[in-house]
Image (cartoon, rainbow, N blue to C red; front, side, top):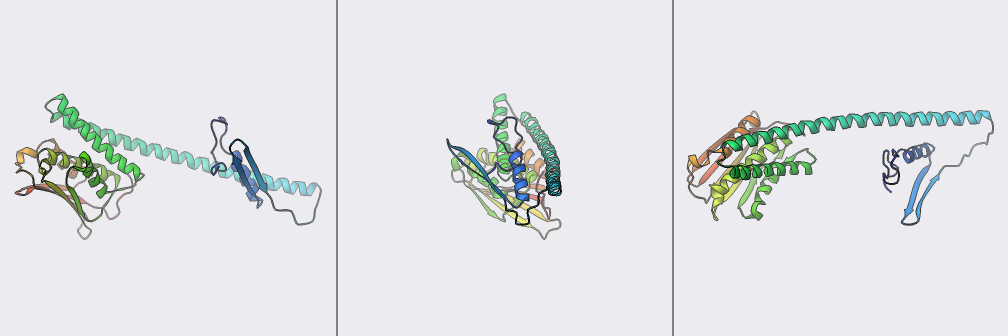
Length: 294
C-alpha cells in the first residue's frame, strides 16, 4: 500500500499490462487542486480509494467561458504531468545506461583478475589437485572482498573489515589483531588488499607464525597525511612461529603480494626475516580525496 501512488509501481500478477502510472497521475491531478487522495485496504474485503477536494467558495458561473477556463487548466495540468513523465523516463534511461556501463567495467576487471590468478596459480602448482585447492581459496578471498563492497553499495569499505574476514577463518582459530589508524578503502584498493591479505594469511598458516599454536599476527595501519604524497603504511608482523628461511616464502604468494602492491597500487612492499618472525611492510600512495567507486 505505501507504494501504490509511486510512478511505475504495479502489481504484475493482477495487472500484467499495467505500467504503474494511473494512480500516480490521479494523485498529481488531485494534489494540483489542493486535494488529497488515499486508499484503505483489508484482506478479503478489497480496497477503497477516496479523495477530498476543497469546495469552490466564489460565485457560481455557468456557461461556456467557465467550461473553457476549466478545460484550459486541465489541459495545462496534463501537459505538465506529461512533461515531467518524459523527463523522468529520460533520466531513468540515462541512469540504467550508466549502471550497465559500470557493471560492464566491473565485470571486465573481475574477469581480468581471475585470469591473472589462474595464470599465476597454474605456474606454481605441482599437480591439478594443488591448483584446484589454491585457485578455489583465492577465488573465495576475491568473493569475500566483493561481498564486503556490496554491503557498502560499492562506495567504500574499511581496512578493519578485511582483517575481520581473516579472523573468521577456521572459526577464529588464529590469533590476528589489528591496531592503528582506521582507514576507509575505495573499491579498487579494497579488492587488491583483500587478495594481499589472503596470501599473507595463507603463508602464515602454512609456513609462518600461524602454523604454531603460540603464533600470532599483528596488523598495524599508519596513515601519514603529512608525507608528500600522503601514504598508507600497513605492517604485517608475525611472532611466536618457527624460524623462516627466505626460500620458503618466495613462491606464488610472495610474487602476488609484490605485484599487487607495486603494480596495482603503485606502492612498495618489503619483507624482513626477523628472529621473531616475518614482517611485511607495505607503503601505498594515498590520495587526499579517495575515489568513491571504480
